[in-house]
Length: 276
Image 1 (tube, helix red, strand yellow):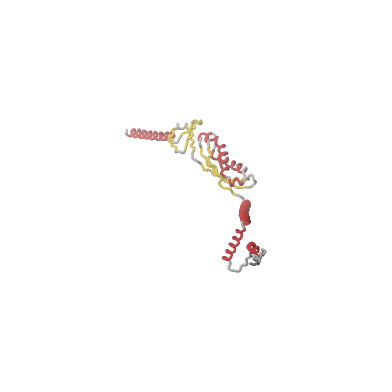
Image 2 (cartoon, helix red, strand yellow; image 1 turned 60 degrees about the vertical axis):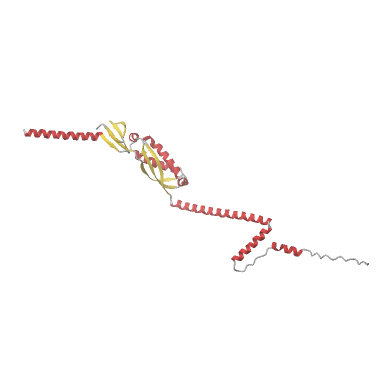
């Protein structure tokens, strides 16, 4: 009798344990918890049911198949590309692409691997777009090229639910011969600017001298005052003997006075002698 009771007790205990395990498996297959940045694309018997999440989602065990998709911003490195610019300069460039999934259902059902596809599109677009740009634009107007790359890549990734937010050309490597040529060009440009500035200074100085000469021509006294001022400055700065020529203009008043004809002094008129 005790053996039958023990057997029944053992069978009921095993059944209870089996029920508990079954319930745990069913709950595990039915309930899923998704973080804030994840979405679950639900396929029911192979057909698209919809997108669920975040939080707790309910599934039919062994009927619904969830595919998790990360909707956070993804940073992807574009491999170095050897590019020939429009003006036939070989450069090596690399870039980064920032994108995120905005349509999880399209990213799962319309393409096999959206990350690899986006990477390949970025590589080919980088090569073709930079091949149409000149080297000066690539170095000086990189923001414009980045916007152009972002627009082209985003247009191609939009059908499968990927939004490209930013494309940045990170590094441009030039050949050594081109670096030396650009250094010589920059040096020549600096020399040209220095010569232009020097010529402009001389031109302005010449204009001032012409104006001063015109003023002194109308005012001879100004020339004499300037000459006397120059003599005063030279005497204050120089300790040696300096021979200074005297301009003729200073002697003209004396020359004119010496060359003027001498008028005799007036003679007294004789008085006639008269008798008384």
